[in-house]
Image 1 (tube, helix red, strand yellow):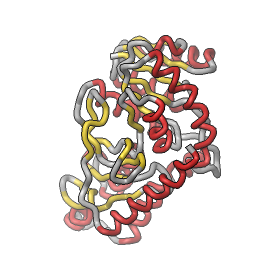
Image 2 (cartoon, rainbow, N blue to C red; image 1 turned 120 degrees about the vertical axis):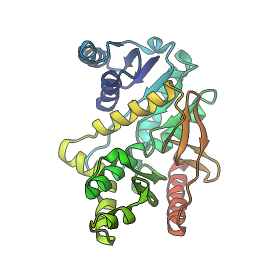
Image 3 (tube, one colour; image 1 turned 60 degrees about the horizontal axis):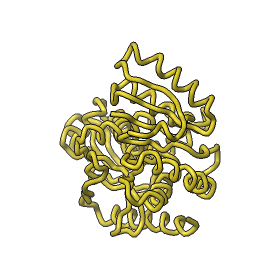
Image 4 (spheres, rainbow, N blue to C red; image 1 turned 90 degrees about the vertical axis):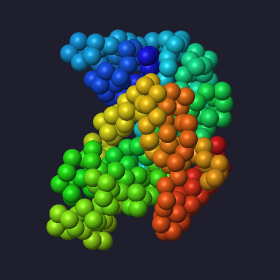
Length: 302
């Protein structure tokens, strides 16, 4: 039940903190090219352990990753205001070529969970750099959570009772699959009608904008996003460690689309074990194909 975190910046450290508070594992090691930063983050997170679940948290070099069941890869440059996730590709791909070689050398049995943006393309690259290991990316797990949160706000219910998927790219071309969205098992429109709540195209458009622009809005206000993705990474990691066979919109290579993108997938101890293709409307299917094309074009530089 050991988890490695490569990259002790805001995302990596927050993921380690979320894992600690949730008691997701017994041991966490943080690795970063800035050893002092990794040590300080590990020490700070370790101080939360006695008042949460008592796990061990420490820092070390790549050799300290040995024995990890899961390694979260959060190393790389952060998205800056006005910069798209795809703008990060060239510089983060260069970082990954160095980092993944070290991870595979020291933790060859680990499931690799990629968090760095652009996550779809870097997950695709990681599968090529680590062909012997299970690899998946955080994909649209966070986007789907944002989608559910905004629907729940409108419906006036606990967000855990809302389901719905964001598919395709974790980025501007992502597809909000309204046909998959339910509240208490009912299509959203039916639930809202049953409660006499307003539901029309304007409300849907507001939720779509809020979902798509969430990262941009947060980055404009505080320069980075990390709490939501940190919790999402903890959830993905827990499902792997516990062999839970959870359905999550992680990203992985998808032969039908010729690229790595996000779809509902069964996630277990060995990583992605199966992909579940939802029934989409014709418009959603076309949007998903277009999202895949955006990723295929961007992947040409890898």
